[in-house]
Length: 101
Image (cartoon, rainbow, N blue to C red; front, side):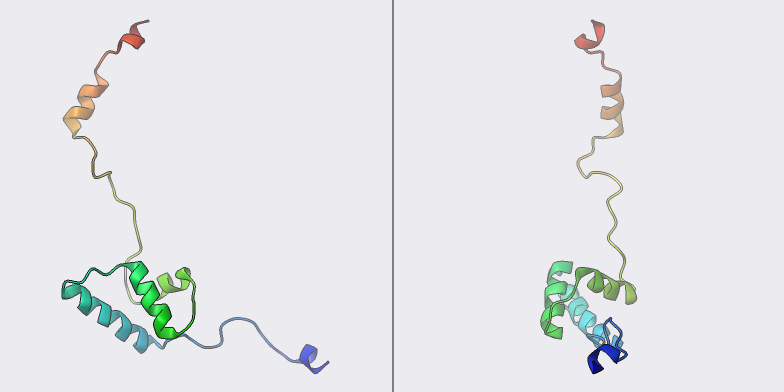
């Protein structure tokens, strides 16, 4: 009965890392990237989970990155193999045999 009457609230009651620990964690990886190592978000996420000693969500990790001013992932403005403007205009002006029927 005591367990039912106790005031308990859900949610995470403690942080995985303090703000300063998160900052130090990201700084180590920035220094590695500046030294020429290839650093990806997947690698950062795995290292983060190893450091905190438990699993966490990827959304929570992206929130950590946002909290420290890292930009969000955005799509490219154009496909890298997009044809040049002249080729596109030329293809628009072609008359195909199937169009004449």
